[in-house]
Image (cartoon, rainbow, N blue to C red; front, side, top):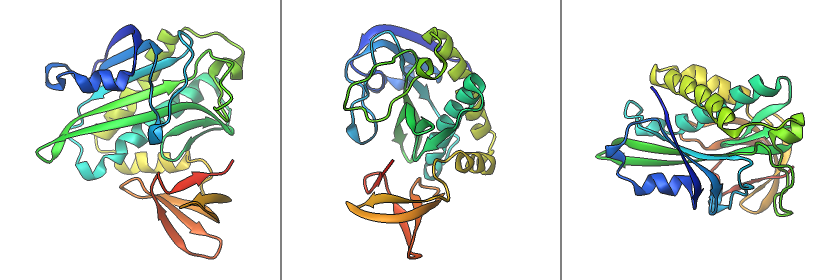
Length: 245
């Protein structure tokens, strides 16, 4: 699959731009990038902060009609792993991980957020819009962002965002082709192997109550499985669980 990048100086949201167009009229692999994004949205409706011209805010149109709807969380795994692949290639031995479900961390700091919007028609996939916010050259963040980082903070180097995007897209398409070829088990294993805090007993807020437990797995549907310190099993969705760093 090829990709085609369209760059806009200013957009409210790259995801919303793709959602507003006639998806049937464009090829899979369309990438919409905004140099300045005014209203980027992250998980749980949070605002994604991105300094103009310094970072990457982009969305990719995929058409995974080969994928059963029940396996839709595999796209989250694919995109998350692609970002991990890119960072491991770029910065080497830093502690890179996926904070469930799809935030990308270096150590205890967040460098990337992912938001996927799935479209279905007549019980099959129509399209997926994959939104990515990636901190490239920004070094100062708002006080409401608790733990951000960027490539420049880590390496001290200025990057050309377009080159970074091309490298990221190489990894996205590579992992996407693995999914297309049916490497479900391999992708599952690699996602878990890169999952932040897997097997580590820690404190969490679950339904606003403080609990202590360890991440054991992620279900096919994308729910997080926790085993509490008193040996209870809890299946969590994104709205129920809050990490404590």
